Length: 154
Image (tube, rainbow, N blue to C red; front, side, top):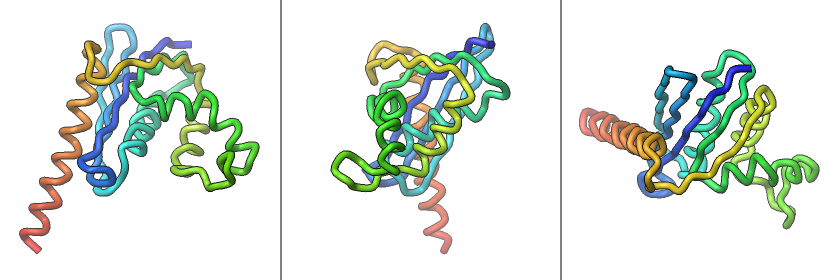
């Protein structure tokens, strides 16, 4: 199995609001940067989307070290999700799990790989995490510019 690093981040201008996500895949000397935006979303959804899109970019099962600054995504996929599935996607209080659609997509994507999770402190001294942060914010800002230009024409 190939050993790959996946570094991710998500960003949101206001929450909810325009959002962006980014992922960096590293394999040996190879590096691939991915990013995208959503017009109206939440920061948590962008953090989740970054991991999902990074895993989707892998063409075969891999050993993936996920370096992430989101405890929400890390804890969700390493612990909470198992209880949610047993409870038919309900929380301990009986409420519907938020972002169920993305959790289910992530669950399917994660099952194809062997993952190891590494939490990194956001906005700290981690070059790839900082790069992901810049890419995600840039994607969100570009989305706002496009929306504003469209509304001025309309």
